[in-house]
Length: 338
Image (cartoon, rainbow, N blue to C red; front, side):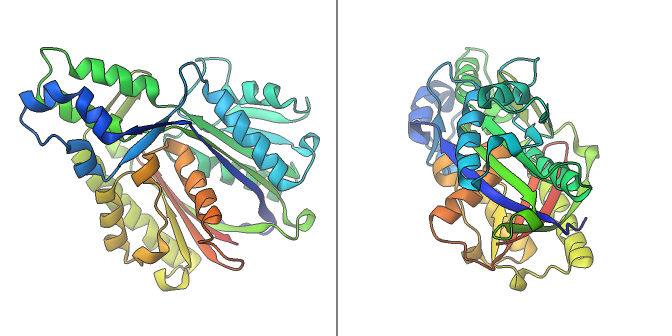
């Protein structure tokens, strides 16, 4: 898909306030670590994640998404009454129903004319939201839209710790639950607009997608657990990413040397290193947030893009590749001209 009249005009993230180190979590699960005889620093050594963030108890996903949205709208320099669509893409939810999107819509006091709904596609959903709004703008259905996301990992991590401390917990159970310790918390939001209404915006140029749903059983997330075949998921995910990158080369004319920055989904050190090697990327062009913030689900890519901007890693005119993947498996790669 190529976009002719879509630009990013506002981007923001919010960090959860409580920094939780991997060593703190390792101490809490030390009984099972000792019982199954694995190294005491197994979380940090295997993932490269030093810390992640938790919200204070009781903070809802809609509240995190609202905070990010308020910042993004301010950054965009538009009146919130101009928004024609709000999409929420968070994995985490306040309730089964109503949608998180309607809660954020109400929190922001948006117009009754502003459509709102949730888009769920695991860690890929934020890019899917960008594509949906981009298509609506291209068709002339809306002039402005916003994608929001709020994630919180405190509850699932704490309940997983309790599960692993049970006397009958074994090596297989530990392995299946291990990926839960990579999860972080945060919020992100992005405002998109018609390019002809926002000449100073950053152009959304194109995207490609592929699915590999034969791998749909490799990761199953619930409110209180995330069961993962970590090695199988990595292999299948890397294969899908490679196929999607080849599609981007063919259809979008991508070449690693021609792109200035690569914003990847943030999973772990091993995943990132293998993906960089497989696709032939320059590590110096890959901004990383997972060591300090972990995997913040669908919010990971917009958070990483926002933090790269704060760190002055992105310059006007840069060609930026947004490279997302979500359990299921689905993969989307987008190009933005900054």
